[in-house]
Length: 566
RNA sequence: UGUCCGAUGGUGUAACGGUAGCACAAGGCCCUUUGGAGGCUUUUGUCUUGGUUCGAAUCCAAGUCGGACAGCCA
Image 1 (spheres, rainbow, N blue to C red):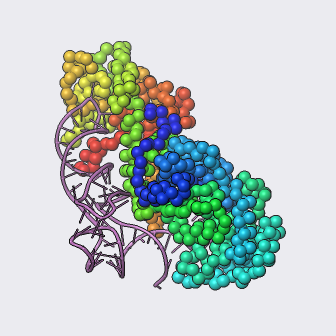
Image 2: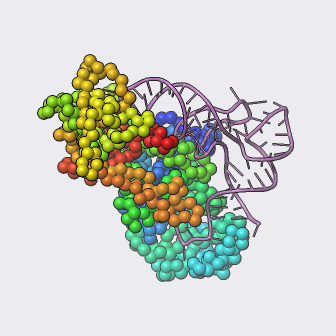
Image 3: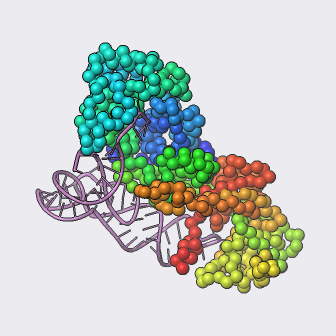
């Protein structure tokens, strides 16, 4: 449990929601003979984000809970925007989240041949035709939500002619966009998706898997339901925007001799999270315009970004469990995610002492040159985590925030004349504040109660505050990146808004911090808590001479809250 | 003035005709060698109006509000 890079076993606790209810009912009725087969069907045109994680947890979760399987299927029907870079990252991310598709990895492009044959069937049955309308004309003929469409002049083309034309489309005899294959349904339908939707379009481009084998490519609506049927999917779970497509999903499967019982589609609400954007288009924009460092920038809501930020798979899974699955399109409070992250990190993070913004402290009654190795607890939440030694000496650094010359009421930290406990060490008292010519504080002169160390005569003395520190002579320097939310408002892409206007200018602050020496051998696979500050993880671009730590999330700060209250 | 879908505290959800519960957030207290964690505790909710019923968050009707749909994207 302390190694968050290990593929963790998704928790055994069974969630409950309306989709799981349907699956349970189908199991009870024996609809699919006891089979449960779901699928996660990403288009390889972007990195996975936390919204996909919700879908992954749902689909793989349902399979796991019911002794079923979940397929990973790349929905690669549009070669003009898809890329292998994405198919690799998607697999890595799903695996990292803790899920396993076994041998069941497929591509919609695996079925291009069969899909073509099915299309021929449709044409023969008089249920599809080759249409001559241009893209512009199609828009005009389609009508509008409350205006019926008009039938294409090609609609009643004879079957033989359709067959010939479709074969010629496939053979590459026609230029891009010249013709489409359309389903023959109902141009007057109140559902626009039923107004003779396009099934195939001509695209003379290389496909990342099928190369130049095809120059016609199936549309999503046509390819998706049939891919589900071919794979014998039982429950095809997607997001709410596909609800309107369901009649078409059903129509296509009902026209063709697909394996029975065929799959059914169910829709749930996609995740909307506060203080972030979730659409692939917008995330891509952030990457391409270099507003972030890449898809795995720790501020991104991508799985890769969260991973680099130090968030664990378990935290993401718990979050997905907590938010549930419904058809209500709400806005999830980012605090829910933050809580899941803290909860998990609290259990597994190794506690360490680190000073982000140092101020020098000299203990005037502590012998010069003396060094003590003090015992420090690695994780109070986990007795098995053990202890370590931390060097202590006369000159220390403490956090600037932990000293105030003129403190407000309820300030428990160091101020002139006051005492605080140095964590794992002595109680000290501030005697003198040394300033430079400009009046800036450069050093604090303190005296230590030399009997107050653990095991000492006055170890039990209670002082109001305990602060962290590092020994100046032993501290190592590290780059520390303090990440904050990427946007300043909860709904950066709300109506009439340009999300880029709301980028948080302070979403990244880079500091050189002073760390206790044990952090010199920090492990990228482990998680750390810099005591009293935040959770951190070692970034992958650390170099031995200068480690770099990313702040995953701060500790809860009730003092900051107190101050806000004024 | 189209079709489909939805509505439970501030947020996310549970209750499947029978005591509106949980988590987060917010407030208070206790504890604390992390102002962390933990423990205890308080506040706040069934969109509206009718109907069915001994009894409705749940079923029905109408309304209100919100979302989705007019790519040869997925």
